[in-house]
Amino acid sequence: MQIDYAARQAKLRAIQGADAIVLVPGSNLYYFTGLQFHLSERPTIAIFTPDGHFSIIIPELEVTKLHQRPDLEGRAFAWSDTDGYAEAFRQAVEELGLRGKRLGVDGLTMRVTEWLEFQKVDPTMQISALEREIIAIMARKTPDEVEAMRKAIRISEAALDKMLTWVEPGMTERAIATRLSEDLGALGSEGNAFEPLIQTGPNSALPHGMISERALQRDEFLLVDFGGRYEGYPADITRTFCIGTPTAEMQKIYDTVRAANEAAIKAGGPGVPMGAVDKAARDVITNAGYGEYFIHRTGHGLGLDTHEPVPQIAAGVEDLLEPGMVFTIEPGIYIPGMGGVRIEDNVVVTESGIDVLTSYPRKLNLGR
Ligand code: CO
Ligand code: CO
Image (tube, rainbow, N blue to C red; front, side):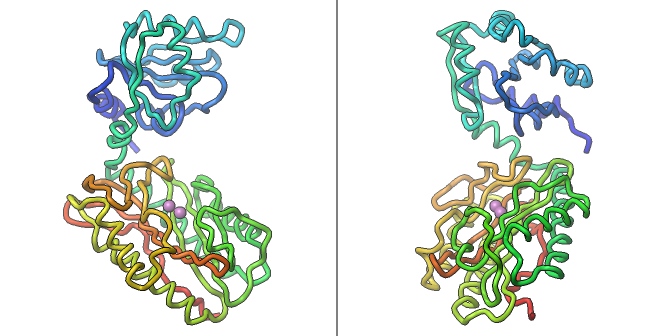
């Protein structure tokens, strides 16, 4: 993937409301620079100033990463474990003219640790949480980014196909998850986008529950929420199955969630309020009498982070969908003690509507 980092950084510098944008290690920093660091006890912080320069306070042992990227023209304020980082922060503030200035940060990832170091240098410095502005830039995906997600999805769907050939009653959730992860890797995925969630029977009623040693039984729900990764970009797919014979109630819940998923897909498109997509799914579930059991938003942004805060497909959000935005549509019904169904697809907003990136069949009964 050919990436124009200078163009991405120009958009970052154009954000209003701060004198400089600072980013800590993670998806944001990777998106705007291609540099990958772990967020650790050693402060690493990138500073984007309006003069067009990119600077970074960086542990000495990481400086080689910068040398491998002359295209970034980054300026390093390096610090060593022996000397500590206070001096690097002081130099950066002085030489970049940040005294008394306001830093714009992603409030979801910026830590108090780094902020206190700036404050030690100059207590008059200020800070603003600008994650919505920062993440809005990342929310509009290029065709290359969408293509990477299509590949991640294709690999994931192939792994799901394979899973249905070997999954049997008696296997534990953990064993299913382990084998699914192995299949993903063998099919070309860069590991899991997130730990696969396998939930059987009553466990499926706990969205974001934990994986357990419970064994799958016949005639109950098997919920699989997982995704591979390709060129850094994830898939995030959920399908719910039943080996054996589902009860009429299970089938009704499934059909309702499926109808909600399809209604949300139909509702989406450029210029549509995000909340309208949530409402389309929620109305179907409420009208079927299960409204109180749909206990989360309909979807989330999908990108380098599996959960991106833009777009937010939730009740009442009036922001409009824009071409290039990729997000999940994942309505669910969760009946405590009995079980739950979620069907999650990944879509991209186009100039004229919605393109569904996932293509895996939505079918409860596996016929065996
Ligand atoms: Co998911
Ligand atoms: Co999701």
